Length: 229
Image 1 (spheres, rainbow, N blue to C red):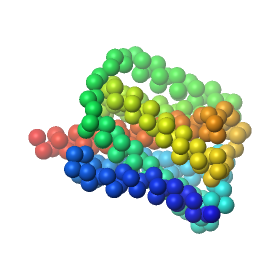
Image 2 (cartoon, rainbow, N blue to C red):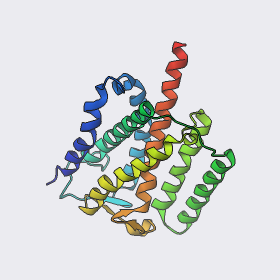
Image 3 (cartoon, rainbow, N blue to C red):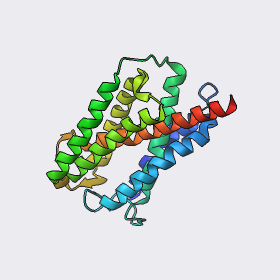
């Protein structure tokens, strides 16, 4: 069924969207912050997607609509809306119901991680592993932006729990995408190491996107608080 990718997007967003009006979380009040948090990373990732579709990965015509814009099917376009919205909703729920105690992540650790992923990107690019190289660089970007904007999401304990939830969700939904398969890959451009059916690069791809969503969401939330102070 070529509408499966669209249906998957509906499943992903339906619960968070319906619960956005919950009185305690009342996620809908942050619609401006959500819009900014989703839109800016979406532009970056859509450009990335458009440039490598048909090379690093492909969309199976059996499960995606034939219509394409920038070589991307409608289901993939919706992916950059539904997934970030659902993840931002989970992030906000965690912060409403649990304390975000800080843990000792030193500045030096962050700097080492940034250096590691940048070096990894260069090495993989030289070896022709383009997807691995790009995703390594993309994963360094939230670490840099978090410090630059002062959001410090990586210094809160809830980020550990949030990341664990994201990984479980990726195992379910990305697992479906790759097992069906709705998405196919050019394995010559990646490490070709998979967790079940999911290329390991996909985990870093998804985390990079969602971390950027969260950083911009938190930054714009704080800007509103400062403006109203």
